[in-house]
Amino acid sequence: MYKYLLIKESPKLKGSVKISGAKNAALPLIAATILSKNSLTLKNVPNVADVNTLLKLIKNLGGEFEFKDNTLKIDTSSINHTIATYEIVKTMRASILVLGPLLARFGDCKVSLPGGCAIGARPVDLHLKALTQMGANIKIEGGYIHASGKLKGCDIVFDKVTVTGTENIAMAASIAKGTTRIINAAKEPEVIQLCKALKEAGVEIDGIGTNELVIKGQNELLDFKDIKIIPDRIEAGTYLAAGAITNSKITIEDVIPAHLESILVKLKSMGFSLTIDDNKITIHPADEIKPITIQTSEYPGFPTDMQAQFMAIATQANGVSTIEERLFENRFMHIPELNRLGAKIDIRGKIANIYGPTTLIGADVMATDLRASSALVLAGLIAKNETKVHRIYHLFRGYENLVEKFKSLGAYMEIREEPIP
Image 1 (tube, rainbow, N blue to C red):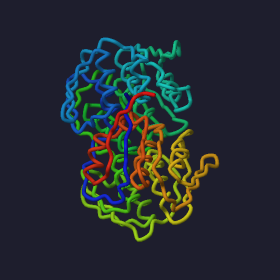
Image 2 (image 1 turned 180 degrees about the horizontal axis):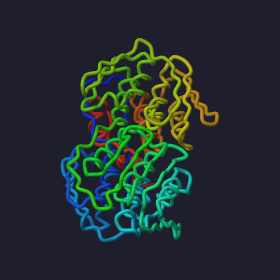
Image 3 (image 1 turned 135 degrees about the vertical axis):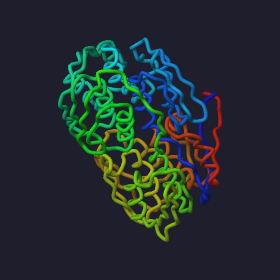
Image 4 (image 1 turned 90 degrees about the vertical axis):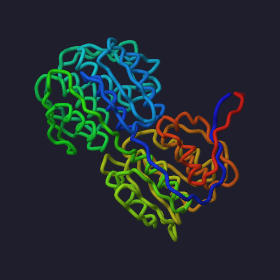
């Protein structure tokens, strides 16, 4: 048997939904605990597949944890293995985040190349180049990155902004000898939370939230304090997009509006009004959904992880919308699937043109990655008849209780099973 997501047309949503902790903040913080000399508690941790995969890896390395009701108690002082095996790493690219901490703590480790990763496809090469500058010996052999050596601080200039690269080097630099300067560092809220956690653990870090980080290594394991994970800005944006595509009034709770600024600006430009409170945002229906122009870029620009969701909304806009994907190749794989539902989208290189409004009609579609799958869910909400989204394991990598949350807003969706043909 295999599972798929059945969605029936749900033209109007209403109510409120609480946003979970950010997967992309939880993952580097879990990896950072490898540098800890004490056990600690992480709160507001989302129970999603990617988090559980990384915890499986931590256990495989010899660490211990207890994960219940979004609270993670973790102790990595018992880690006694330094090989991150392919069997675990293949399912999640973010597993590369253990490379910096393992190397800094033990001086020798092997981490499988992330699943499906040719060096350079996503810039794992930037991580390796930076670690080499810090004194590591790096060999690629048998599908593994074998890193060894004692790390020393130095100046590192990233050729392009890399979130996981910034996180990996910040962690490694925290217990290296000397001072590391990271130039062209990522400024995402998730990077900021990691750096603040390292600072609270005793690391001297200047420039948090800017594109230049200066980290004075402690040359010893760190004393981490308990941490509450920030809200997931991409999950928040996805539910706002659900309100937009159905032209409904819904409220998202437990959010940090400042983290969503670029998303909110685009929703307003499409004709939606927003009520913003301390930690709540309500989206109100638009008289007319207007077309949009989007270029993805690093934070604080428009996030690549929201591009697919806005493309789904654009199918209902009155005119031609343009979306340019500037960060990743192969980030338009949802377009053929949206077109299967009746969308009219063409691609010219890195630019997609979306012709709206179009009537969408339910069909069988296939999720190709995490954010692409959420765009198909949004389209299914307004498609006539039934939409079946296959390969839904992508969804559960990053969205906690997705079906239950959508049902609470009045959407009709359920997970079904059918025999493998």
